[in-house]
Length: 325
Image 1: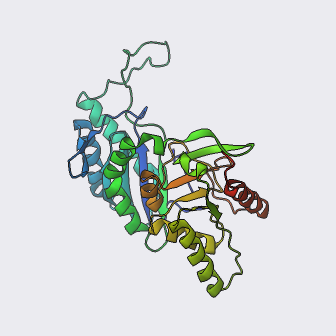
Image 2 (image 1 turned 180 degrees about the horizontal axis):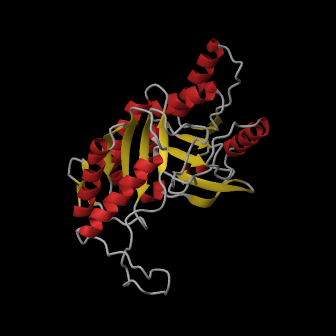
C-alpha cells in the first residue's frame, strides 16, 4: 500500500503520467447500500440506484470539472462497489491516487451531509460500542484497485465489462454454487486445491489433456486442435494449465465452441475472485472448472519451469480415467 492509499498493480508504473485506468472501490463492509439489482422477464439486469448511489455517481461525473487534467469516463454503480474509467489526459502534479481519494472523501462527506451516514464520532475507537448496532460510520473500504489500460483493445474491453456488470451480478446470484470458491476440493488422489466452477467435470470418465510444445509447427498445432475439439464434441472434458500459446489457442477454441474445460491456474484466486470474459459465461453455463494449486500472488510473476512441470503433472493426474469412481 502506498502513501496515497493505492492498491497498486504495477509498482514500476508512473501514476502521474497520462494513461487510462479502471478504478474499483468497495463499500465498507461490502454493504448493498448503493442500489438494488433488478431483473426483468427478458433477463435484462439493471441497478436501481439508492440516494447514496446517486451521490456517488454525481461526484464521479463532477471530477472532470474539478481536475482539468483528467476525464471521468464510463462508470457503473453496483450495490456494494463502484467501477469507473479514469483518463489522465495531462501529466499530474501528484499521483492519480490522490484524485481517487478525493472522490471517495467527497462522496462520503455528501452522504453524511444528507443524513445517509452517521456523523463521524470524535471518540470512535476510544471505547467499544459507541456506535448503534448495525450503524455504518464510513462509506468506503480503505484503498482501491486500479487496472492500467495500456494494450490495444483494453479500453474497449473494460468499457464493455463495466456495462455488463449488472448482468454478471444477476448471473452470479442465480448460480451461487458455480461462483463460490471451494477451498479444499479433491481433484485427484491425494491432491486438493481451491476450485471454482462445475466440480462435476472432475467426475467425467473421459478427459483429454491439452499439452502443446512451444516448438510445434502450425500444421501440427492445427491437427492437435482438431483432434482435441473432436474429442470434446464427442463427450471428453479438456484439461490444461494453458501455458503455451498453442494450449491457450485450443482452450479458447473450446470456449468459443461451448465445450467443457478444466483450467489449472498458475496463480491463486484473489479475494472476491470471479472469472472474467469468456470464462464467466462458461462458468455460468456449467462448462468450466478452474483450479488454483498455488497461493495467490498480487504481483505478476513469470512462471518458472518447475511450476510448468507441476501444472502439467496436475493435468495428467486429473486426466486419469475414473479415479473418482
